[in-house]
Image (cartoon, rainbow, N blue to C red; front, side, top):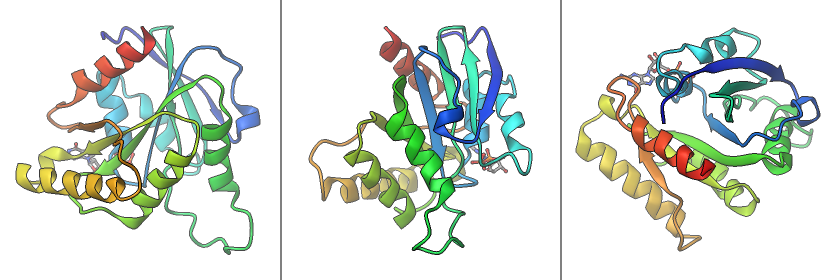
Length: 197
Ligand code: GDP
């Protein structure tokens, strides 16, 4: 898929504030520093779209970018830093993410970003386990593959899949990417194109 245009539309603090749109949405999420901004910019072809969301203080918003006037790229806030909230209290941050993923009618697919340099991390596994129970289709995207030896990346992916296989036979589709070398870009955009067809 050729990216002709990718334009920031709006930031929303909750599901209720998300724009009314019927275009299919492809949402990206992962823990902070996983390489999400870099990946989104790489996918957009260097259009620097995630810059908007990188402004401090604006990171806990859902950011919408219209692509080619046919689909919407959704930048979800990074999970894994709202840990100071007491367990008993409702966490508005997690509620925003859950609200969007469980409640957005035109959500086509969630891309869960995982740092390929590390063995499976509990927070990522917990998030994927939560996704599995919900209605949204999702795939797993391993990031920063240029930063580790190919063998280590392969091992980490296999370990992650092994963990997921413990509770479900059918594994989600997996992509391996690097924002630096742009590897995985054609595969991800091809996947989106197929989903749109
Ligand atoms: P975010 O917090 O998830 O948006 O992560 P960023 O995209 O800001 O990336 C965090 C850091 O990792 C930055 O210093 C990036 O330059 C670096 N980074 C992200 N992706 C890659 C990648 O694929 N390869 C390399 N070499 N560095 C990356």
